[in-house]
Amino acid sequence: QVQLVESGGGLVQPGGSLRLSCAASGFSFSRYALAWERQAPRKERELVAGITAAGDSTAYAPSVKGRFTISRDNAKSTWYLQMNNLKPEDTAVYYCNAVSAEEDGDYWGQGIQVTVSS
Image (cartoon, rainbow, N blue to C red; front, side, top):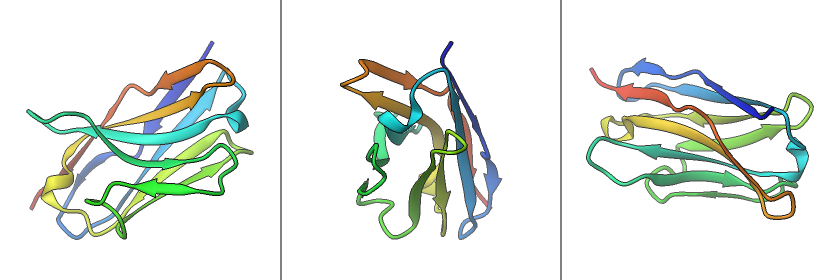
């Protein structure tokens, strides 16, 4: 049974930091590319960051580049989104996503709220 469990969200002041985690089980973690997406109220879902299955390449949305860092720990079947210098416009529900064309898998976390406000 596939499970993706997110943690680390919450309320933070502008300029603060949070680290989101997504702990996975039930599939071949190392074979999957991983990503974080977010959806703010009244906005479309946005791809925030991604990392390849090999962990050798990452990509970021222009709005978060230089502030957010995606990483993975295959030994723990977990990936992370380190978010620094948070801004009110980063407020959204964040979703973790694992995808593999070879494995024919596309899995999502339940979503976790991040609120940036003073």
